[in-house]
Length: 133
Image 1 (tube, rainbow, N blue to C red):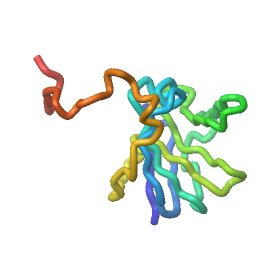
Image 2 (cartoon, rainbow, N blue to C red):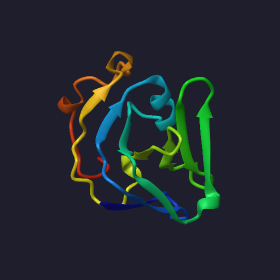
Image 3 (cartoon, helix red, strand yellow):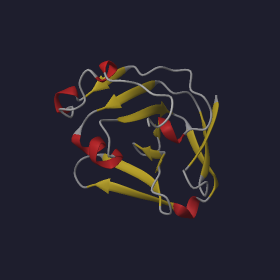
Image 4 (cartoon, helix red, strand yellow):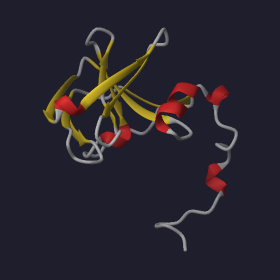
């Protein structure tokens, strides 16, 4: 299977060749910090390949010391991008960075004991198709 993606400014473009085996919504404090949100939505593709199609020189990677937490991002717009872990054996892809559709639904919420206090019963709050007036 092949998926394509890009950053917000369009400088970085990539493709993932392989299958997404897991899809986790991670509520750990690291993922909250690096997304600025309640959780990260990451797809895991063991044995897949990550190919940069454009803008590879714009990709920077940050690894939080002694944690195993890695974030790749575009240096121009800050968008989260895929990274390769475990000595090339695992590609981790932020779901929102993909331009192609992913049929897979999330498998689980993880690290829910670290969930933000405001991230509870969100299905009960109003929903709008666009910015409310």
